[in-house]
Image (cartoon, rainbow, N blue to C red; front, side):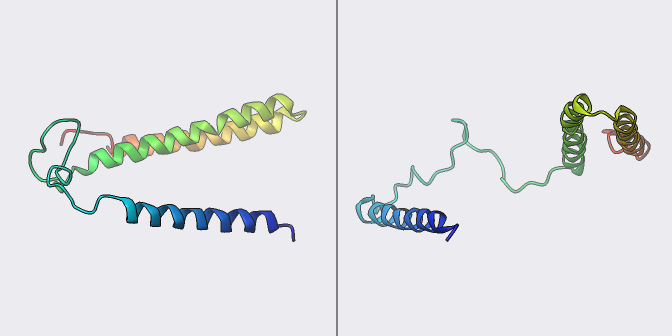
Length: 119
C-alpha cells in the first residue's frame, strides 16, 4: 500500500482531465472560422512551403554544440566532488581522462571538416 496515495492522485488527475475535456467539448464553439484556421507566424504572412529541406550542416552544427555543451555540464558535479574528495590524485586523473576524450572528439570534428561551411 506504499503507492496508494499515488494511485488515488492518478485516478483524480485522469478523472478531472476527462471531465474538463468533456465540458470544453460541450460548451465550446463548434464552428471554425477561416481566419482562425489560417497560418500565423509572428504577424508575418508565410512565404513558400513549410516543408523545404535544410542543409545538413545546420543539424550537424546543432548536434555538435549539444554534444560538447552537455559534456561540459558534467564538470560542475566533478568540481563539487573534487572539493569534497580526499583522493585528489584519482579525481584529477579522471578529469584528465575526460578532457582527453573531449579533445579527441574535437580533433576528430575538425579533421572531418564537419564545421566547414563552404565546399
